[in-house]
Length: 380
Image 1 (tube, rainbow, N blue to C red):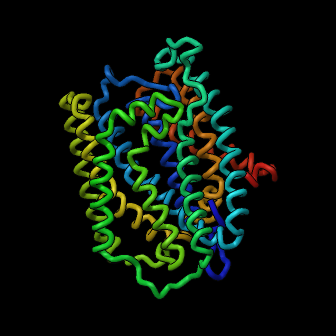
Image 2 (spheres, rainbow, N blue to C red):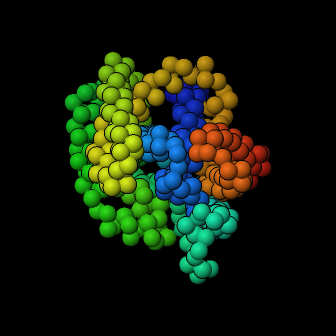
Image 3 (cartoon, helix red, strand yellow):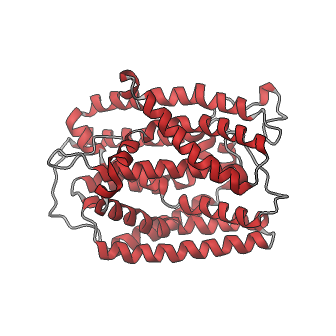
């Protein structure tokens, strides 16, 4: 979201490529969440499933991907805000954001989310199946929480710019943050995330409210704010394009060790049949590990895609341009797709392995076709 260009004016493809991958992972995780929790009212119970490994891996993927994909999206969003505000001015930028965030938000809230809930309710395994019409959770933000938080961050940055004045300039003489800065930020935010996660009463109340998406993601809001602001700061010095490869590789290895340890814990709890009893503690542990794992994965993805920008190709960058729209439409795509797949009584592995690629392809393909309409292309 934003004009992604280098100083020479050439579009930076690897940022778009990363966005495409992150949104594809979001879609994949929402498919897996239908087995662990539910998504837009779609649920496949695993309580009597003869596939315990699937349950353990699904939970691990949910926890692992949540350590970096939304973090990455907020970081990239912040990276392009200063230049855009400088180019358009504060008021014009805010008007543009109201258009490009407000219209998709209303369409998603009133049309896509409500239609998704009604379709999901038709499934006998849906938690919504037995609800009366008055109890159906209409007008819930769901995945649109991202737009709300992003718009708030945009407004806060614009307010700061209006007070301080617009002095955006690029100075690559400032070195990138080193290990000490990485470590301090990760530990401080890890403690904050763990403390926020303990506010279970608050998140449960939000989950039951129209702001249900914030009930699932609100405990990470300080980390999201930090990464958005870090992106804004990094844009002045091109930090994301000048990463210390030695530091990145070292932290990435550390992140992988933590992630594999988390996988082992998930599998042990699943095979012991104690996952439901211990999930709260596991989630609290993961909340603390989120920045420690996420920093390494985020940095490595930035480094890898920058080095392999040409080999990944224009097609992935083009998908990145469509990624915002794919994020908006994917709930109803997944609900219809999963409802259809459920008719064939497949095992969890086959459901996931068929729904994930199809959900990604259809969501991005539908958005690409919609963007052929000039008016829609200006919005998504």
